Image (cartoon, rainbow, N blue to C red):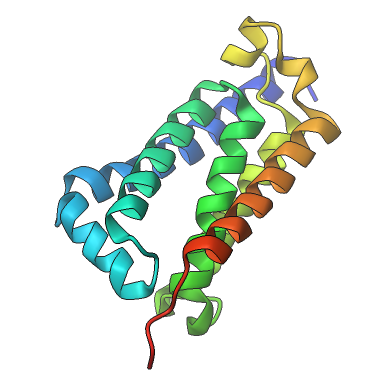
Length: 168
């Protein structure tokens, strides 16, 4: 693939995925019920303490989304996205089937899969990682391992430590 075409494709992927994710965190913190409403919802689904998880989710979504968009510590940004999507997919969407129109896990799955793939491919030359000279150290198998490994371990670890589903 032509270098500029690859770099443009990665820029489009990073910016669209990253800013969509950041917007999701922004709405948790600043729109609708804000942090207080999000905290109550987290408590209701079993992610306790709700206020802590509302803060962590919004900060992680905004931070990792912007980092991915900029191509900054790209596979670590992807890992944060994967971890959040594992928690969301398991706590909110898993019992609703696959399709998002039925509140299923389609969205969480595709965000996590895109983040892992982007971590393995690398951010491209039009990124801060490239500008700082660290892109080649963080892509390929290393990026894939960071994005998938840390992301999956982080999501599972958070569920194991904090998820206490409400009694039916």
